[in-house]
Length: 211
Image (cartoon, rainbow, N blue to C red; front, side, top):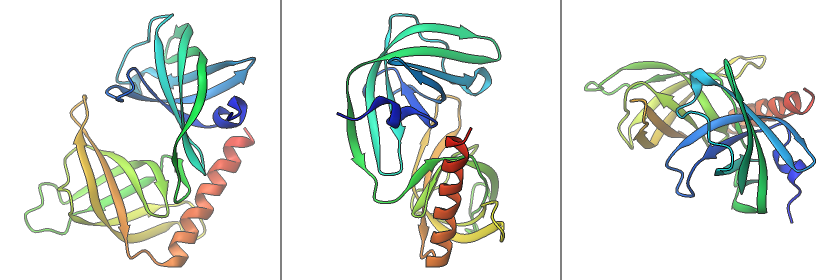
């Protein structure tokens, strides 16, 4: 059985109300103690209101080596500028996907430039939602065409700061707040740039663990 403490401490989790993931919000893990997990997120960034006490929800935690999922029961709710919910996992934690590359939930500035002459929007400044050496996910105010090749300028925050690359749009789907969840895959990314991304992700993980 996967250890609850190791899976959910110091990481962000996706929270959804149904197994099909129709309603997804991103929460930070505040604490894990005595079988209880406290999650917190800014109210302004949530798509959905507080879940009723007693309701079930599902959580996914993206770890460096895999993605884990568990069902949980809401036992406490409080909110102001931040919504805080306390949940108790029910049943075992499932490993639902083994990572081929380290992927971490992280918000880094990225500029997307569509060089196509008929592009709906030629430039967008957004933030990554998660990142790996293979690609990243973001939320865009306007749609990008699937299979479009996009120029990417990613702010890694390392010594060289910016990373420039090409990426291919592999998914673009609307969200309930009229934006677009977009996944991009790096195209022909140099090995040294992949190493820079991995080093950045390890730095982010270390900073979170040391909080």
